[in-house]
Length: 420
Image 1 (spheres, rainbow, N blue to C red):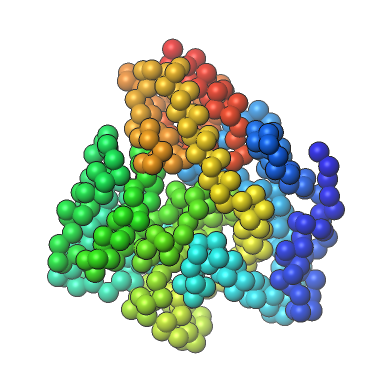
Image 2 (cartoon, rainbow, N blue to C red):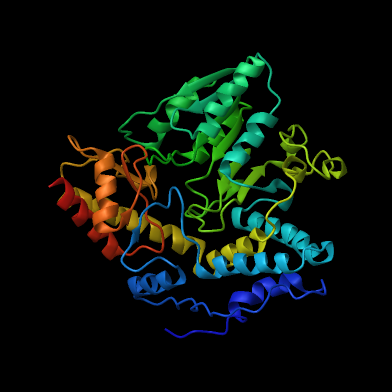
């Protein structure tokens, strides 16, 4: 594969941001990253070549995108270079360019999510974004919040702790284990809404079952009843084409370190512009008093941050733009469908926790094996077969675009060897 000058495509985007600040953005690179492959009719060849963008050790199969993804090399290098840039010169003058990047990054994220820049703020992860809403939404003892029992603790336990403080009610909803349709998934939530309900909070995709909820249906139904919606997008941000205007949610959260394959400790918070002024900050830091009530960054004055993450995050979004959001979504769904099919054919004893239907699932595939300890399978996959996965909700396998169809065959053969 041909290599290009590292200061060309990989750096041009970042250099544009620095134009006019009078300072060279980042120091020279010493190692070139491979150029992105060109799309052609042989899709598997393209995706196999794209794997070269990642530093995954040869022979290892990473199937843990639901928890943590590797970043493309260009992202890792941008983070490293920016860190060195700051360490070389910690002056206010040198760091001024990163303040400019902050706004540029919010603009790029707004485009990526189809929102307005004034509705997008940067946090450290989905957990912080969720808690910004939990702690910031003004509730009274007469109010009610409806949440899914499969939510992450930051969109479930956090509400329950908040309820202890202010006396509001938290109703926890369960969905059927074998849903027949998206409507069947939505019905328990809709049935739980009462005139007291202020907010409906749910994960777009469950990290413990792989169930994908019908977000647009739920958000629309909630808005018709004047109920706010908080969608935890930890398992959708980066692997699905997200159109927040079309989704119709009031709040959306996500992390860069999962499916987006970005730098760690970068989160996003979306809040519909009409609601920003009503939210209270849960952390008050420097420059808070300079913000206007309708400025969403008023909610994220966290103090000193690792500003080197910003060029790395911009590089991440550039990578997604070059590959294509639609292609990434299609690839993740194709890998998942292949994995499910292989499991059905070669491991008939496996029980699917995740729905087989594509319109009720995504990139998270969870199975269990009767009479087998999932942690034992998890360890043997790693130690004996170099497969990294998870035991959340069962044996959780979550592929991303750095995986190949061949690996979907290999992991099933490895499980067959372990469980017999």
